[in-house]
Structures are given as C-alpha cells and as structure tokens.
Amino acid sequence: MLTLNYEKIMDLRYGENPHQSASVYKETKYTGLSLFDAKKLQGQEISFNNFFDLDATLSIIRNFDEPCCCILKHATPCGIAINNNITKAYKNAYLGDPISPFGGIVGFNREVDKVTAEEIAKIFMSAIIAPSYTTEAKEILAKKKKLIVLQLPMEKELSHRTLRWINGGILLQDSDIEPTDFSKWEVVTQKKPTEEERKAMEFGFKVVQFVKSNAMCITTAQITLGMGCGQPNRVGSLEIAFKNMKDNKLLDKNPKIIASDAFIPFRDSIDLAVKEGIYAIVQPGGSIRDQEVIDACNEHKVTMLLTHTRHFRH
Image (cartoon, rainbow, N blue to C red; front, side, top):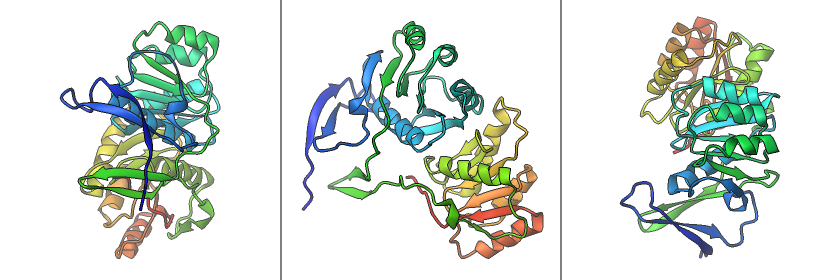
C-alpha cells in the first residue's frame, strides 16, 4: 500500500491550456529541494506551465557543480552552458539557440549580478530562478514587471523519486539524478579521445540526461551547440541537432562531440556525424549492433566512448 499526502497550495489560473482547470499541491513530508521554498521577488502569477518548466530548469542547474546557466522552453532545454563567468555562461547558452529562448525560462546555480541581469533584460523571458541576486540585478529586473523572479538556495538534494499519473493509477520510479561515474566509461575505438574531447563528452552526457528521448546533443566542453529530441528515430534527432547548430550564433572552434541518451542502433548516425565534421561520440551502448557502429567509427577514424548508462527521458 502506498499512501501519498499532499497539501493544496492554491488554484492556478488554468492548466496547460485555458480550458483546463488546475491547482498545485505540496508533498507534506518532503524536505528536499523544491520550488515551494523559493522566494518570489516579483512578477505575474506562476502558471501551470511555469511550474513545470521551472522545476525542469531547477533539476538541470542543480546537476552541475560548475557555474551553470540553462535556458528552457516547453520542458526542453534549448541552451546550457558552464563558465566561471556567469554572464558568459548566459550569453553562450543564449547564443547556442538565439531563437527558442523568447518567452522561456532561465536558471542559474550562482548569484545573478548586474551585468547578467542587463543581458537577460534585453529579451522577453517568462521567469528566472537563481540562488540569489545582487541589489543592482534586482533593480534592473524589476523594470520587467511581468517577469517572474524566484530566489532559491540550492544546497538541498533533489527528490529521489518521480511519480506520473496514468489513467487509473500511477507510475513510481527512482529519479535519474545519480552522479555520473566517468571512471566506468569505456573507449571502444582505435582512436582515443583527446583531453578536450573527453571533457566535452562529460559535459555533453550530463546535458543529454535532461533532454527528451531520442536525444542527440552537439556540445563542446562548456556549451551546447545543437540539440535534437523527441523524434521516433535517432538519426532524425541528429539531423535536427545539426540544423540547430548551423542556425546558432556561436563560432566556437573547440572540439565538438555528439552525446546520445541511449544506444546508437545503426551506423547512419555515424556517417551523418562525419559528414558534418564530428569525430567524437559518447553513447551508452547496449545494442545488438554495437560492433557495426564501432566498426563504422573505426572506418571514419572517429572516437567513441560507451558509458553503459542510459538516460531515456519520456
């Protein structure tokens, strides 16, 4: 027997669409990291979609130890970047996909300062979440009257379980939040990764963990350059990722890698990657055609690492 206790916080204006009624409830005994502990500094009412997107953003930025910025739209990250300079992290996350951020959510795992706030204020965003803001940053963001600004310290851990409602029941599982054990990764190709390629693979695989299946992400060691997801086949996602990369505003000359959330079942993804200039790929492996894919990599002199951990996100 599973007993769940939730306390109603408030009714919402409407659900995902205006014809759907909605409300928000808090799990009574939950003590981990939660939007319910955030302090709302300003802005309009938080909607059903805002709650969902802000929670997704929170999970992503909490996953990085480095200063991180995530821009998210419709539950899907469109730009993620890490950088010791948080303004640079924001700019890189934005420039990796300068079209999608309009009306989206932006999250930081570090304090937002004046310069970063000035950059955010240049476009329309729905909401921003960060652990803190400088006084100057608050004053700048206050001019955007409808912008939701949430302040939430992020020392606590995320929930270790996820729950989804289905007709007549629920699905309950462990959350996919365990730290990646990079020591278990296996180089399976003749060509070994450079140090910079390895760093890019580690960043890319942490990113792809939060992108909808079938996810294919093109990244450097600090920036997402193109993401494709939600397609019924993996090469379709990869084609979208390359299109997005060509549309972005970053001229990053650092090594570019592809990260896949689940195994690559056919060599078509490898052939496409090489055609577009990619020579390093990280994926979980586990397909009956792994050897065919590895052989294709060796044929093209591509580096491939197998993580042996899948990150499907339905």
